[in-house]
Length: 144
Image (cartoon, rainbow, N blue to C red; front, side):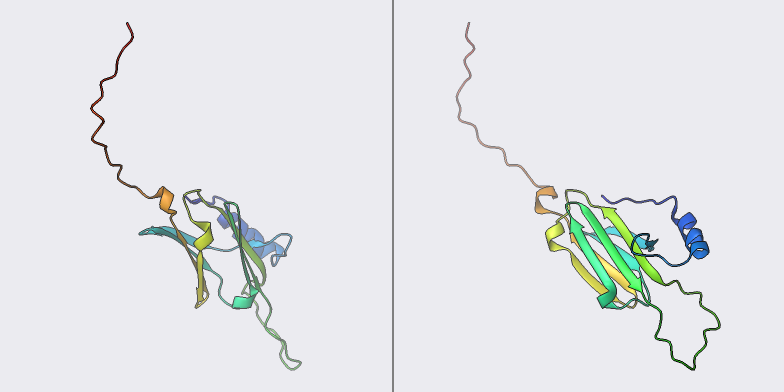
């Protein structure tokens, strides 16, 4: 239902360290987990240090896009940064969702630096029983 592998994720991480922070035109990738839990898919993104107002979640057709921006902490005149390893800038992830998911009812929660999306499986995609009628008792005539 979701794209499960990203063979270039580690390469992207190393490139990000060398090239600097992500920008709106070239965002950095954010790590995620995706799994099925009952009748819904759960996707969790790690984006610590991002405020809820710096998150943007869009769904267009079957494409889910999550963007986040981690801004530098407010600098004070008497503070001199000695070490800065936490990545700043724009982070983004796009996921192609299956037609069997109900994109109208996605729920989003953000807690402790983890954005969790819950995407229900559409009713039309759930297994269902088909009842068999008793039949009309009519015989089919074969022309002959």
